[in-house]
Image (tube, rainbow over all chains, first blue to last red):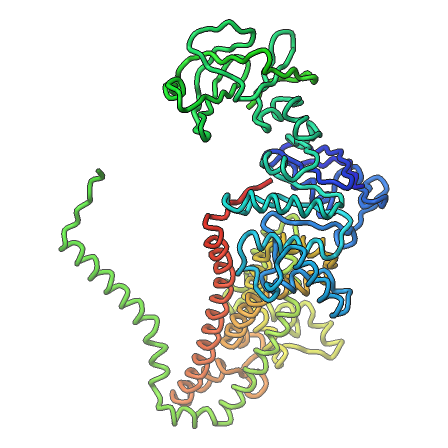
Length: 331
Length: 292
């Protein structure tokens, strides 16, 4: 069990984190600059928090009140950096074996071989990091982080440096690998889709605060606020008497004239984005921005232009009522 | 369609001619005096001149003092450069500027400053006298003058070399169980090494050519403080030939060192850029930078 609860003042806002991770993968998702990487750095001991504590497997790593601060090299936490941070002056095998300097040569070589096998990189041990593809570099970094048998694993945007073509494949491979590991793992991502695939649970982070923790379904069906709704792609609109509803863009419809439905909003089209077979229309209404997927094949889908004033509506049965009261505005 | 700016061929030719003349004059001015030194005396005679006792002594002294100056500079300059690179403290910019001062200060001023501190009647004069360690006008003074004037070149290069080490590499080394000291030895030092060597070569070249501060602080005693540049100055009185031969030797040494720096520079750049380029081409896309 990895448990951390701390605060840290950042230039723009204050980071306030309270997370518990068992033998599972927690995906920490949020926009750039939300404090996700700083959270990992505090857990790894690279950044000192202002207050609070970090504990792993019953061992206190950080406790500001008790003046306990275990140095990074004594934490037994593996850390995969966003750009993989492979040592350019060392070969693949030397990179992976870097943390095994206390072992004798034979057992070190054995462990390196096993680790490279684990990430399916056998035969590349003499290569330089610069000769590898992005996916291979990621696996070397992962092997290097795991070969020391850490008690927990931190991954900072593990997929961000990969191109779109390989990304979904490597994402599934990484998912399978994390399941095999079964140690407390935190994956940071700005991409909700990555978080959904990699994480057993998802923690949505906004401006230094974890606004919601739950399964992907929890977050999609009952978004705690507009930020989570935007993250999962759902619309979150506050309706009368402080009641908030959530619905998916593909459940909503557009109409030029008012319709006979309970939930409808008039607004101006501010954006049209092709999305496979559909076009995602963003409508600026008094309540909030509402995203509606319009079938691109229909004449109606082709006809809309930015600046048109239309009506978005959603059928009663497609609406989920949010249990948590919130501000509602999404953006 | 964008309108094309039409330049008449006459104007274009005139531009090419004028800039060619300017470049030719600049190159001639910079290189001709150096080339003249090499061609003034026939090589056979130059070698004979260098074998003369005065020249040989000066050459040996120059080599000895500049080598010691570089080693001392590296020993004391590296921790300072590292601190300037990693440290965060008030007044850092002021300190950085102050450390670079010897580069722009006239060497004569450097000599006066050294005398005021280490001279017989200087700040530390009585202390040194009590320790029977008078520095001024000794070989040690030559090394000090050289280290003072040339040191900042090494410190600046070393600082840049440490700056260029990716902080993520240091962080990841720590998370892999390496202490700060081990991280320095296994990650920071090897990665900064080409820059450190380039800085040492530059420092050596500057120390080899040191004249003004040495003249003032160490004097011009053959065999004790008379380095090659001072010997050249002295030899000019008796005849041009020996001075020219020694000048040619100094030029050759300096050029070899500069060439070495270029080579190291090229290696640093090639190592860094090559990696990025290959990563990009393998990925098929520009590597995107996403800050979380």
